[in-house]
Length: 173
Image 1 (cartoon, rainbow, N blue to C red):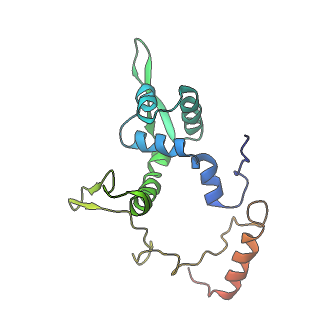
Image 2 (cartoon, one colour):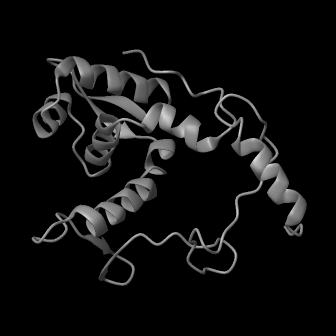
Image 3 (cartoon, rainbow, N blue to C red):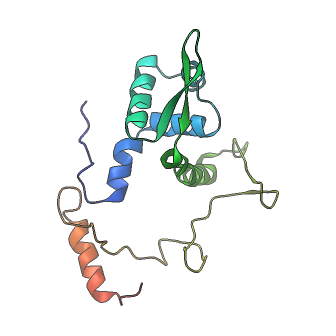
C-alpha cells in the first residue's frame, strides 16, 4: 500500500508524521537516542527485517535526523548517531512514553523510568508553557493560525476553523 505524502500539508503535525509516523521509525529513534546505533544491534533489538530497517535508516539520514559514522576501518563498519534535529525528538518520545505508561503499562507498571540528572529524581514529561511554566492541556489552550498556515489538502476543514478562532481570540504575543 502506498502512503499519501504529507510534506505539502500546511500542518507541522502532518509534516512531522510524514517522517516519524510509523512505529518502526519511532522505535529506531528510541534505540539510537538511548545508545543502540549499530545496524545489527538495531535489527536484533527491534526484530525488524533488515530491508525495512535499512529503508527507515536511509530516510532518517536523508532527512538529517541521523548521521552514519564510521567506527571501524577493517572491515568498514558504521553506526548511527542522532543529529541535533534527531535529539529534539527526545521530548516527543518522552510524551509518547508518558501517555503509554498511563494507558498501557498494565499491572506490572511502566517498563522504563526517566531519571533527571539535575535533581536526582525520577520524572515524567510535562508539556509546559514557554512563558509562564504552567502545564499545557487541551482545556487551557487554543490553536490559532500561524504565518505558514493555509487551507488546503489536510486542512480543508481545520484551516477555516482556526481562522474563525483567530477572529474571536484577543491578539497577544
